[in-house]
Amino acid sequence: MEGMLRDPNLVPLSRQHQHALALCVRINRAALATPGEVKAWQSEIQQHFEQEIRFHFAAEEKHLFPAARQYPDLVSLADELVAEHKQLREYFAQSAAGALDEAGVRRFAETLSGHIRKEERQLFEELQRRMTPPMLAEVGEQIDHALGAGPETCITPTESILKNL
Image: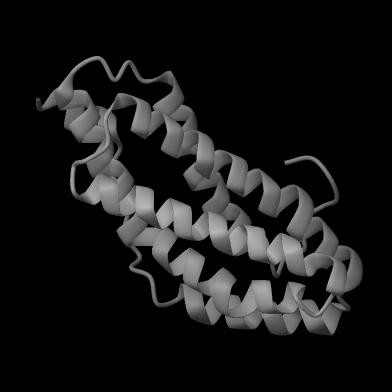
């Protein structure tokens, strides 16, 4: 991620962004040539959502986006990001139902990576520029608490699932 050094209070979210971007990169490189491969990726997408992303979205929606809305010129960005969360939740629901085809899996990866880049390059940069260290520390504490609700489990990579097909 280019731009300014990430404030330590936003690092837990950035770390999860990196996990999700890694998933997107792996999807982009995947063949997705057979129904079994598409099914395996949907399973991994669902696993990411259950183990990390749903807690991540909740933390952003409850703590980070309201902080952004304190600044009138960031309100529309916060609204856009909430709308993208809604769209991504729809992809996760389709994935859980096994309803995504190859194109759907690829669109999901494109949507998620674009969303993450917008948060990192626009929202995080602007909040770091505007918020005082005590304000960032308070938001960071709230985020840590919210993310603490998530399980401390490791996400199984799809390659291992694919080998078992």
